[in-house]
Length: 462
Image 1 (tube, rainbow, N blue to C red):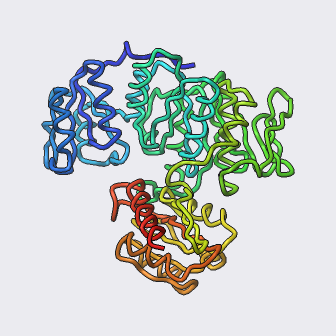
Image 2 (image 1 turned 180 degrees about the vertical axis):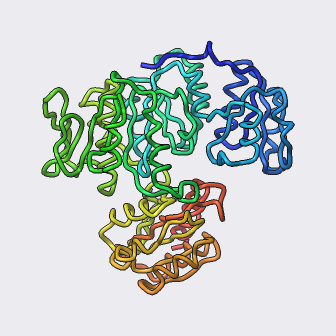
Image 3 (image 1 turned 90 degrees about the horizontal axis):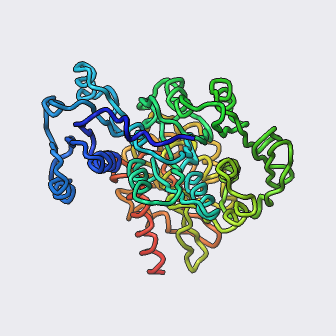
């Protein structure tokens, strides 16, 4: 079980690179502990007007737009936001000047005084993290959910320090956040699955896997690592960690953990087989969400939640925003789903497999060097019409344009209108982009909410 490390944070003036959620969270945590902060971002100051007013109140020095290496003067550490590659010139300047580079997750861990439950993987992280947080809350624990989920881990740590109750920090961590950790130490960790992703940052799959494996870098025998027994990279991870492995599987029984047998979910602890519920009782759509459920069950149990409490949470959990999120149904029987978090090919594959009825698919955005051809067969079988958007539209048309009726939209409003045309009872309109959002939107959340706004316009008009 990890404890507070507040007393041994060794730096008194820190440069924070990146003024999005992670950077602002890091800044707030550092200032809370009386540490001087220089906040820098390459975006122009006009994009940070409200933030700049806050920085003045908190006596934070800031530089936006163009700046030089002098921002590092008199700083004894550099905190880097996860979206910034380590090859960036400012990071390399820090290396050359022997200034330590710290990830936001590593920084937050320095000040974390509560046990940490950390989830990573290629897909399913946010749903699983949210579900674990709800399970622990329903079991009477003060679960603070944060990380790569919309609330910076630093914000979660800061909130827990302002709360006198016993707290569990439930955090989603990405490969970007794990790349340069040194002491980050969860009590319970999970790797849900590993497949090719972020190929623009990790051309070699081994580099991506190594970043994910850093989740358990500091875990010990009395810690618990929850792994997917059906995923070869997760099976290999068990050989490389000192933590005690717990398993989940859709395909086979496990020695300890959770699995599916004859359409029912079971837990195995200390050799005892414990029935949980029928698969059909889990309200989340898709087999991938059953995997997420299995992982969450094991993590909830490792953090002390009773089985009956876990079952009650499962029965009422409806999922999270932007993950195959039900938006609404038209008077003509067309259902709309927002899966904006599907930023890679694997996520789109899981989304399409979740539906048995015809799908009108809205896809596209900034491609991540993945080949769309891999889903040719699935698109041919599942998609009745395709609406493409964003930078990757020509590439998607090249792969799928001859397989299914395809149209291109200039923006999300037009995409929703084109997707809604000529639909009938039982059809599914699904936003599942298989791409990053940054060509048209600030992030996948803005993309998903824009989709939902235009869907509501369509539903109100019909």
